[in-house]
Length: 286
Ligand code: DGL
Image 1: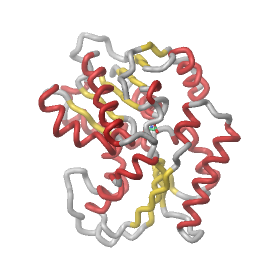
Image 2: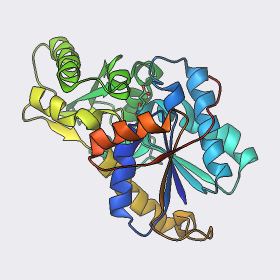
Image 3: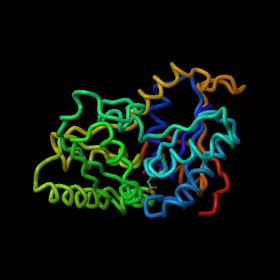
């Protein structure tokens, strides 16, 4: 069983692609809806909530957990991998959406921490739309600069967007919010379009069309696709984490939420057009 964690609905964009790519594998999704959005929270809060979420997924039998949340990955991935996992569950693994995204932008694998020849002169402009906490963590610019130092990274915080998506805001309101963030970015770029754009919050693919409408002709990197490709490579190298040895049958998909299962299931259906029955679990205190 592979665990997929997010503050709320965003990780479902990743979960959906993983379920399509790996029909024989079992996935357990956890949305911490009771504590969403994570974007306006402090770093220590995000770290503690993420740790609690991963802990719960480990307790439910997951040997591998994917942080399908950029905010959680930007703040907590390295800390949990290096400081918590070795003691809590040395045989288990935590991966995060940040890693394949940085690899795709820079063309360099994560293990490479100095720019590969040929990448040094990459002077494209990449815009990253993300939550406030992800932007403040500086994880994207720092990790990109290690591998592609000449690349210009412009971060655009979208402080209210994930919360509005979680609250089920009507499309017109979401469109207005997206337009305001895109316009702010373009203003900072002196009206020039960026070469490519990362929707660096897993909630934003739920409104990808609204971004595309405002950024015509700009390449938008798809995190769900990148995560699925990266997981395929990972499981080829580490088949023991495919999770088929836990006794559960293949192809299981279960959805847990710390929020109100009826509300969460209804909103998931609005975005994905099919029923998803969420089961309740207890929320960690923020
Ligand atoms: N989906 C999350 C992310 O990728 C978190 C959004 C939030 O809870 O603010 O950043």
